[in-house]
Image (cartoon, rainbow, N blue to C red):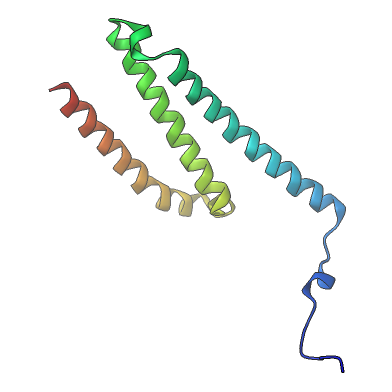
Length: 117
């Protein structure tokens, strides 16, 4: 006796091969962008440690800021892609991302000011 109350959803897909190619291309692009940002961060940490820079406080400060900026770019990109915020209107993106960006800048300001004192 065959059940008639089940529905096979995999038989109801209507995607073309072009859409599949486009989706795979997007996945590879996301992987490439996040990998490059991570490799740059790791290279900053490996090749420019504080001991290698020496007494140059300005260079060390720029290395730290570059690391924080790359981390924020990666976090924003992850939110845009994996949380599907990139598909929304520009105003909604700013409404969601701007408070977080301001809060992170505030925390960085406190961190840098208090660390210097």
